[in-house]
Image 1 (cartoon, rainbow, N blue to C red):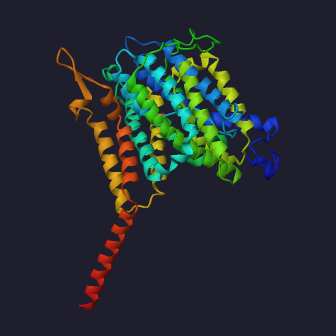
Image 2 (cartoon, rainbow, N blue to C red; image 1 turned 30 degrees about the vertical axis):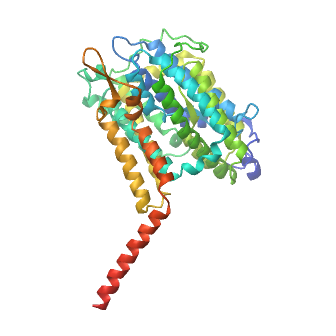
Image 3 (spheres, helix red, strand yellow; image 1 turned 60 degrees about the vertical axis):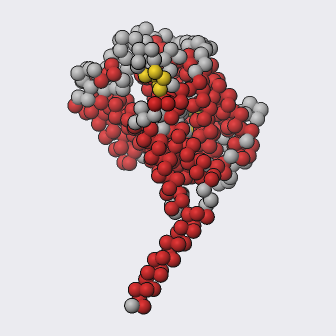
Amino acid sequence: MSDASIGTPEQLRDPNYTPPLAKAVPLGIQHVLAMFVSNVTPAIIISSVAGIAFGPNADPGTKVYLIQMAMMFAGIATLIQTIGIGKVGARLPIVQGTSFAFLPVMIPAMIGAGTAGLAGLMTGVVIGGLFHACLGLFVGRIRFALPPLVTGLIVLMIGLALIKVGIEYAAGGAGDFNRSKDTWGGLSNWFQAGVVLFVTLGLKFFARGMLSVSAVLVGLIVGYIVAFMMGDVNLGGMADAAWFALPQPFKFGFDLNWAIIIGMCLMAFISAIETVGDVSGITKGGAGREATDEEVTGATYADGLGSALAGVFGSLPNTSFSQNVGLIAMTGVMSRHVVTIGALFLIACGLVPKVGAIINTIPIQVLGGGVIVMFGMVASAGISMLSDVKWNSRNMVIFAVALSVGLGLQQVPDAFNAFFNVLEDGSKKINTLGILMTSGLLPTAFIAIVLNLVLPAALGEEAEAELAGAVKGHKDNASNK
């Protein structure tokens, strides 16, 4: 979409340049279309885990509120990044949105948290966000401990941990309530999910412009229409949703749940490094330069402050959205004011519960088709990051041990008795340690970081040299014979 009518090459590389409004508004909406589905999906997943989306305790109003806040605080966090408050904010075209990275920690914590529920979750988001903001003081100094081997493995694990959710949604929804329904796993569910997949892939690879950028969103719309024609769309809750509503501070209460708090703080490291990578990608792709220390620090401050503010009003942690980094490189427009327009659009949507109510009517199997693509892309992003790794014996061992332990604990959560407390009736209840470890993500990150710091890089090079020498000696002996 970049052309001479938008501005000169020098202007397009300037974050402070404002394109003509007739061009800036479509560009801003384009950024929203690229991230819209990914932004509201975590809120839908958490509402399912919390038991308010389906079943006898379903609370559609709370689910709509979570969706509404996901839009509003993605917009507010984006404004903090693009406009800035003092040292907070990179003042770059960074789009913030609800993070997938925290889901592998939040899901088991919500299931095992018992009575904590959304109160414990949102308290953890606030405390984790404040901790995240503090990382801005020294985030540049810890980058040495997180090379592509570590960050790529962690992102891969995030994707692998979430792929199960995508399959469950496509089959008809996660949780025992959904599995008990006769329709779970039925061909009609998979047909609707398949329509979303087919349309998404078709547009992604054979369309251009906004259709390609918003492929997942358009795929969901087509899948929604098909589901409506098949009688699977329930519009009953639409009439009850208001046309305007403000966010409510501490709507779900305040409750300290250490599993969630510890998990949020530990995952803040991963989110901070992801944001550093996105800031570097924006400045390189859009302006052809390296990010400054002030931009990296400001972006990290904004990440944490945006998440803490979101938690106060009942929303989930925010982070920079990588798909929008690619969009900046594609359009060639570096203007932060373009992204500001998109942020204002998100805030407007968040003030209108009717928008959240419409999203709430999307059948879970239709959403599953889009989620399969999104979570698969998370895993693919991890593999892409790992392509920068020099695969010697040292790095392969680190990868193998960290992946095996993390993925193994995720798949066999009862492998350690220490993960559970025995109740008076003899039953077992997962404890804080179990919640953190069975996510798979935190043990993987811990092992990868420690081994990468402890094992000298020379070990891999020496092993390669010995192997090369042995092969050469074998060939020399064979030639002498």
